[in-house]
Length: 151
Image (tube, rainbow, N blue to C red):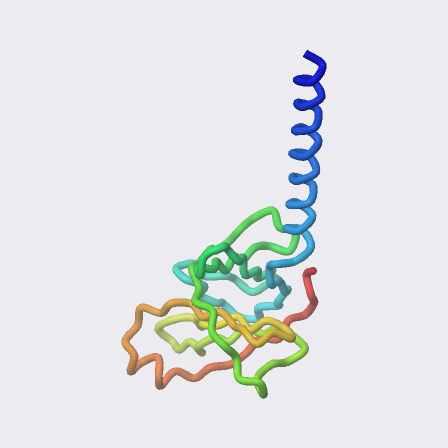
């Protein structure tokens, strides 16, 4: 009986240690996060964001799928969650500040988010676009620079 109790205590201790290490690893990074001031209406997927400050976070999974989440500054409300495709960034495009690239809107549609470029990273995240390739190729792109690192 004593051996069984010792064994149960040891298993419980190992499980608790594993959980604490896993949560510390998840909290220490792994996600790419930045805060942005959006000055004009911005379409993110099917959601239109009004002007304001938003936190953009790229969540990494164990697979090759990544999710981009846009939330309010407090983190209490998620406004959009989109599947994104990671892509390699050219060395000259790597900068010390995170950036959002967006397609400029016109009278018929708002500006639309296309890419999240992470500070000091050789990877960026592209949002899938359902428009025709000809329209995308001719689109005028601008960028929004991060106002703060949200790490």
